[in-house]
Image (cartoon, rainbow, N blue to C red; front, top):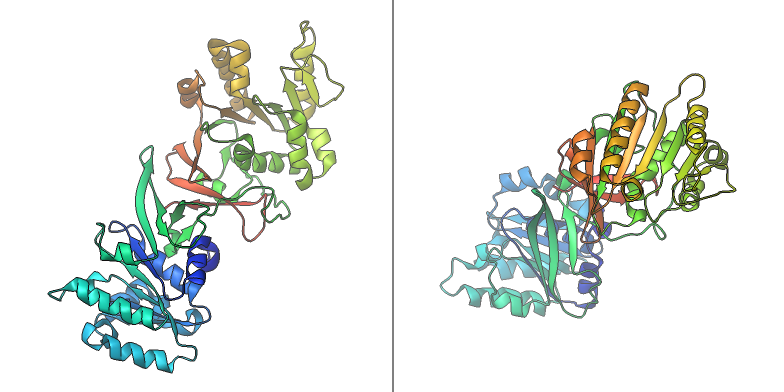
Length: 456
């Protein structure tokens, strides 16, 4: 994952400094929450036209090189001047003189400063608050904006002085930790999202901006080859997470929270469908409640040849009593003579003489509603056995309130849980056990290609 500082920090931060020259952003949070990496990413984004100064009074030169080598080695690229604990800039007695010297030498002056942490500069004085006021006054009188990292999470003088206060914190979902930030104060800025999910994956700060399918950059669907042992999930990242994808002959569950819309769980289902169809492998679906065959077909059509959809995608519709479409088998008729056979004929057609694999997809809420808990479990056990024998693929969608929840977890080979955190669709593995991943459109290839970013 490459670092794009402007794209990967909340837009409210950029707006805050654009609207408020000589302003202070106070960054707070517990140890290890990501305050330094967040502040550095902000400085990279802000200091693209004017020089920025970063001051780390607690670090010596070796530590700074070890932890942030890019900051020391590539000063021309990021326009930042780093200072550590054994430089004059980090010494309060020298600070004013060094600051004035650097500010006069810079072509357009110093635009931004980072103090990380401010406590290390002021704590050696009998009146640290007074020294803090002196430094802040000097910075503001020079029309320089500052990001100040504070170790103390309590409310201090700086909370009242700063125009913006950002708090970083840890949270967890079902025993899995993730990081969030919240705006406690943002003077003069419209705050569209007060909370952002973020990660420090691969050593970069990246916040996740809420997105939707309608406005995101589109691209061409990129299929992935299956292997002798696994069907691809249609996503390189998910194949890697699941150690190759879905095993041939496996049954797999996607369990979704009640705040997940069908358009959101399709993010993980769509790539599987497209990949199967691309490889001339059929799909037989029992849609979940609220889904309709036409809406699913229309969703896939922009990304794959319509002939493949017409030839290889079929639906068992238990709520329809009749259909003029060959690809919809109406299973809701009062007289069902021949309907089960028609379903078997479709499977036979999809498999062909050579016994090609196909995808058997079931909206489990539909089945439980129609035939009840015990019959649904019995039906699934039969389907799981058939899937393993024929080496095809089974996928079920489980929605909240499903009575057979524990039963399907026990019988599944892979069990994924999907939820939203701070408006971002995410998932984690129960079987196999994984961390949480944020689901984002691929910046390189465009939607419907996705990247799954670990929340580290």
